[in-house]
Amino acid sequence: MYETVIKGKLILSGRVLDGYIGIEDGKIARFSKGEIKGENCIKTKNHEIVLPGMIDVHVHLRDFGQKSKETVESGTKAALHGGITTVFDMPNTMPPIMDLDTFKARENLMKRKSYVDYALSFLIAGNCEEAQKINPDFYKIFMGASTGGIYSKNFEEDYKCAKRIVSVHAEDHELIQKFPERPNVVEFRAIERALKIAESTKKPLNICHVSTKEGLNSILKKNLPWVSFEVTPHHLFLTRKDYIHNNMLKVYPPLRSKSDRDFLWSNIAKIPIIASDHAPHTIEDKENGSAGIPGLETELALLFDAYNKGLISIFQIVEKTSLNPAKIFGIKNKGLEVGKDADLIIVNLKEEWKVKPEDFYTKAKWSPWEDKKLKGKVKMTILRGKLVMEDDEIIGKPGGERIEIEKG
Image (cartoon, rainbow, N blue to C red; front, side, top):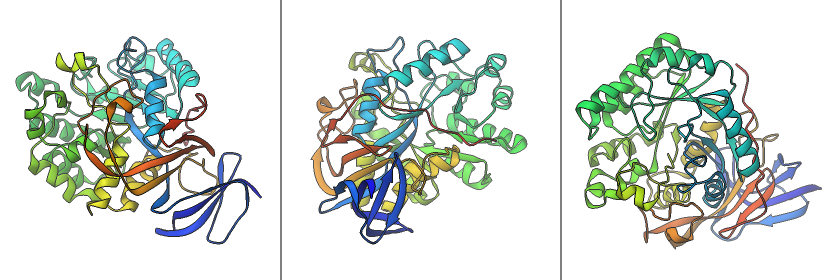
């Protein structure tokens, strides 16, 4: 008899089947088509399906000197509410995570306050000597200034300095000075440069928030096996026309044309990762020109809504939000397999609900999708075998742990 058994529709062998998941010591112990017993049994209801929790590889949790925008506590509660069980914490905080003491402070903060599992990052911008003292789960490099204003003045040198995968914000600094509105060429040139260096060094690279036809085309043409990339929900579901009517939608890289968005969708099968780039700001900061969109509590729901409209399959959602992130970033303890952490969500694919940001856990009480009806809702979130969110309510205390990374 297992500690916990989940009964319902599961993703098994690339199909949706009725079955059981046995959970023991926080790990997936067994998948079964036949009945298995548990001390605690969770049964799904009509239209519900059991999926792996999302691994969001691009999350700005703020805190430190920006508690008014978001804290680790509020942001990771928002993650659980949205069906996310692991977040990659971005380092352009205040102060930025660029030295050993700040890294240790962040590690301690995450250990005490995070409600989800997490990956720790380190920001490289001419501080290679300091980077050698630290063993983060991933690195971040900005090729052009974004929130925080720090960028790499020597991308090749900084990239070579990293000991494992680098997530790069690919916008060319010099072109931003010429074109502050950041047209497509700003992203395209930076991606071309990053790909050229990645090709010569063969070091793993993840290109953040690809938003343009030209940028995506370059990555797909090169097809380097050690290069991954991500796309955000706001670049999949919004366009520049939305921004014209709502300056709260300022984001870097900016929202693009319908043609760019359509090109992303036409290549959805080739996009390895979808990530939120959750970037919370106060409404006052947004009105004063801050760039960023909150997304932890809407990103999976938007994808489920897209599934209901026939734009994406449930298998593609699982692949791009959970399985691929675990594989690409070398996370040992995550994945929908026996022996991996029992990070699961129960989703009602047919439930319709209206986006009400005032009910969210994030401190950013606004959303591009306010009052929009979405079809598909996360009903339960399970982290390492424990029920931590049910029917919009967070259960328990902070219990997040740092992910385990494969060596090499």
